[in-house]
Image 1: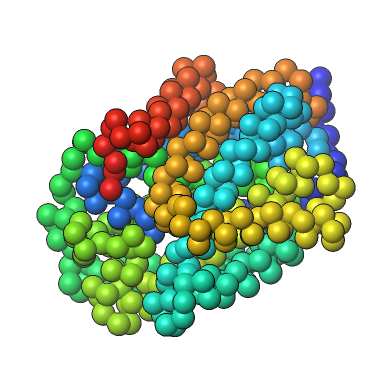
Image 2: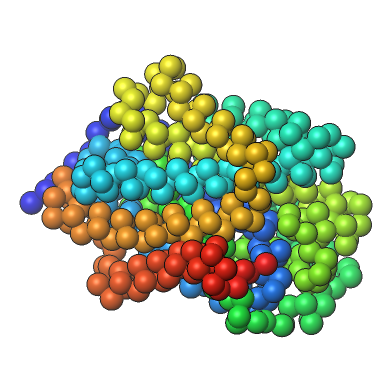
Length: 407
């Protein structure tokens, strides 16, 4: 019988997180560019279909995250997703997982770069490229200082972000009011692309190994509760923000970065408040995604340590330079980056966690403090894979103009 041995230090250092810091990393990772794109992305499909797909995508993404959680609890050495895939599935699985992390992370970071540039341009009157550079300063500094600093920063900014969005939602309902007609129409013809956007909005799968090493020297049994709490809070915010933006502006006036039109509909004070919320949302997500991407690079490229200065500089450059270049290359737009990144990375994040969990149960080197139980039933695993792969197939058929584009 395997013992519940302590986790071992590796290239990735064990750094402590509290329960609410872990929850805020999940919420911060999820609440980023995706939440700002949803109102625009659903303007043809309608808000009721968004709520449906948020529920479906949220449940199955949480299940996928819990598969990863059990896998990490069966593994002594803290590893990122690509390292876990290498341990349990070999080189092909590892590179497939690393590709999924890279595609989704770069898609996220492109959207944050693009969106932050537009927002700071509208607030400060500077060029979008200058706005993006201003955004990058606090984004990169926190990532440089690692998981512990990221967790603390996420906690403070996430609480502030929730306060700002609560004020805006209350003002929207109590002030001009939300038009029922804008929130009750729906069109199944444009439904499936909304599912792909919803998958992207729940992107915190990549943070699970980070949370495990954050709890490794405290109470690691808190991990599944932190995951489910963070995902539940995410789902509420993902439904309420586009509800307010779309309910105020309507499908014809909602903008690609929704808080711009949302703030304009409420007045000057709300314009600044809404876009401050948007910047906080992008910043918290940039921190979580960037930190996770950096440690995946360290893990997959076999760097000696995440805290070797040369290795960390190389990894950080790989995190920040490609997204900035792609954001201003004209090759991909804000919602497009979100849509395709969510679609294709979702395939890997449905299949590989299932395979890793099965292998970890056979050859893991720790006895886990928690297991998935009934949610790991083969029928649930099959449905997870079918849903996520179906979303990616739709994206391909959308791209070649066989099926309708969502927006």
